Structures are given as C-alpha cells and as structure tokens.
Picture (cartoon, rainbow, N blue to C red):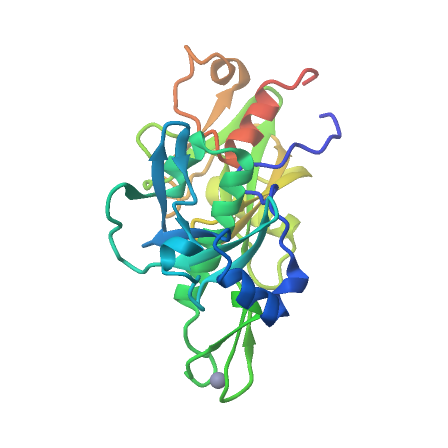
Length: 299
Ligand SMILES: [Zn+2]
C-alpha cells in the first residue's frame, strides 16, 4: 500500500474558517446576529432546510433578514463562510413552509460540494449535541450556553460540558486477494460493509480493532495500518479507518452483531457486473477503504 494521505472524506469541514477566537467576542457576535448578510443553516428534526434553486438546493435558505432582523441567541456560531458569519439554528420539529423543505443530510450530500457537506455535517452534529445535553449530568440543573454554543455550563455546580464525538474504529480485514465484509440487519437490502465498532474506555484504537474483529468474525488480526478518519454526524461519531491483515480461515459470525459476514474475492468485488453484493454509500469511509484495496495499483 502506498503511504499517502487520502483526501478529506465527505462531512469533513473544509471550506469554513471556524474563527474560534470570535466565540467569546460578544460584541462582534451581537453585530453578526444583526448583520443582514449573516447566513443561517436551519434544521428541523435534524434535517437540513433547503430551498430549491435552478442551480441546485441552497443550504442557506434563511438569512438574518428573513428571521425578523436578527439571528436568535440560541443559534450556534459555526464560523466564517466566504467571510460571512454562519450560524446553526434548531427549529425543533417545525415543518417548514414551501418553498423550503427539510432533507436528511445523507440524501442531500450527493448534490452538495464537499465544503457544503462538511459545513452541514458540523451544524447537524452541534445541534444534535444541544438537543441531547440539556441538563447537568451531576445535579440535573439547566445548562447555560457558553462560547457561542460550543460549550455549556451548569450555573449551580459550575461543571462544563463540551460537544461530544464518539470514536469508532472501522476496518477492512484482508487475506491476500480476499477481504471480509459483513452486514447488519439495519443495512439496506444486499449491502455488505467493513467491520466497525465503538472504542471503549481504556482501549487504544489498535486494541479496539483487534477486539471488534475477534468478536464479530472470530479472526485474529496480524498487522494494522491506520488509513484516515471521517466525521460521521449520524449522530456523533468519528470513524477511524484501518486496514488489517488476517490469516484466511472460516468466519465465526457473531449473530448478535451481524446478520452475515463472508470472505469476498477482489476480482468479484472489483467488477461491478459480477459484484454479488451492494457496497456502502459513496459518502462513507467504508466505501473508501474497500475501493482503495480493490483498485490499488500494486496489491
Ligand atoms: Zn450541575
């Protein structure tokens, strides 16, 4: 395998200046909330509100002017997008009126630029965190917003809370010209993917990969190589992608985790016409890990 860094995957922030220093600049933020050129990513039930335009869906259907003159206080400051401040606003379960519609980010991703998909993923992840982290985990008190929505603090016991990202390992296991793919019951029909699981407290990434592969298919992994990572805001994961070698052996599939897992040959997966299963979506690091192996010039 060539030692190169893959390009950023979909849902990685690329086109946004996070402008972290501005999160505590209350005068500047107040001015941006009243600035008619500021932009708002609005979400209803974690779906993105879009307006259909001839050029494609516009993920910024609201601007400060459309919101009655100001971006409301709970909106989260995301950063600067082409030098315009951009905020994420949770509209709860409100159904948008036409011409707006609420669309799942994954359904929208194929028609967005990588930078837009990254911005919307960031907005979705933060709005999800705001919905889940409403009260203090220690005393149950209602939390105050800090840092323009990037932290919360309990006024009663002073505990601070920060947006959560859950690390998960995802791994393509190979043996020569074969690789292991499995399917969980929740997958779309016919789809097989790489093995994956959450990292547990006290575990290194390598240990998590070894444990997941052993648990899910009963294989012992011999060599691990980290490839790349992908933010996966469905709802709050960071996928850490690996390649691992194992000895070819019958799989012992964990029926709790997987409906099925099999060895597949490189040739049958590489040829779309012969491919016996569906591969994961083009927006996923799972697809990247599989295709990187399938089409590498010098296997
Ligand atoms: Zn508290």
